[in-house]
Image (tube, rainbow, N blue to C red; front, side):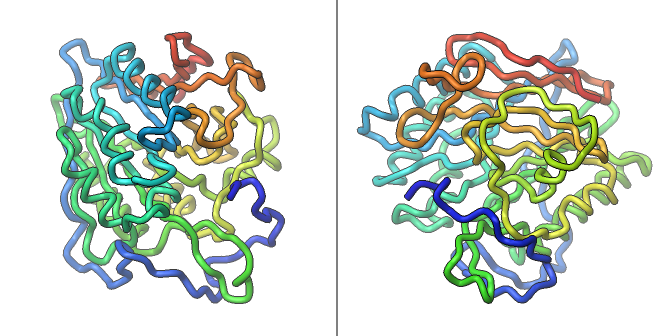
Amino acid sequence: MKRRSFLKDAAWVSVFASVAPVISSCSSLTANNKGPGPVAARLPFRDNGSFTLLQFTDTHYICDDPRSERALACVKEALEGVKPDFVIHTGDIVFGKPDLDSAREILMPLAESGIPWAVTLGNHDSEFGATREEMFSLIRSLPGCVNTPPKEGVYGCSNDVITLQGPNGTERAFYLFDSMDTVILRGMEEEHCYDYIRHSQLGWYKAHSEVLQADNGGQPVPALAFLHIPLREIERALWEAPNRFLVGNNFEEPCPSRVNSGLFGLFLERQDVQAIVTGHDHDCDYVLRGETGIYFIYGRFSGSDTVYNHLGRSGVSEEKISGCRVFRFRQGQAGFKTWVRLQGGEVQNELELM
């Protein structure tokens, strides 16, 4: 089933509308009163004060399928070429059976690299036999993975926070949100809808954000949020924001959930998240600045030919080129750099964002 065949013209659905969610494994909605829970990893800057984060997304891997060869080559080549300090895969790791073997094979270069890494699962990662819990358990068993077990009372599996430590404490936080797969909305039972970030996840993020702020002398800790499916607010940023700042390829409409869960508003209240980093829409790799100053950032499609993809060296091209997105942070500096790295090493659209 091609994702672009789904209807995309339904009205905005408020989080206050009646919903009848599909509750799968890893989706407890029970309240959690035990505090924010553990930090998945506390990572240091290099001795020169730099920290490099590499993002893969949408590898859509199927082991023993020749169409996947370019995706595996892309992952191996990027790890060697970038030499990152940390790696995040933002989901749709696999796209067929045998799904657990496929996940193990495409993630094995990360496991063998000696570099710490984490994932936030995509909508397809629990569609091919294994439950979301089984997939996440397999991923967590691989060397180098810093993801922690699913949080009691928090929707989804792959919700985690990783911090970047300077000499005087935490300088950065990377929040990973599990955007799950699909949901059935009452009155729209026959229509496709991607799931949305639930209130338990909002509470989990808010608790961590408050603790980090308190430990930082009352100042919000600058953060990036990583999830597979874009938030609904990206549509307003694209279509309504005047004088928008957009750099990169934008060759398909975003496919967010139809439900606005309030996560973006909470980011504005907490004043810590500088950018929302996603995958999901394969023909986009842009950086977009919204009216509020929060950036919407797509990773570069890291897969191959098991799914649609049209990105080349400079837009739509017959030559399909996979890649990754790279982030560079400097100790003591509020902003960060980001760029797209194509398979083979070419760098595109290097930006310094504040």
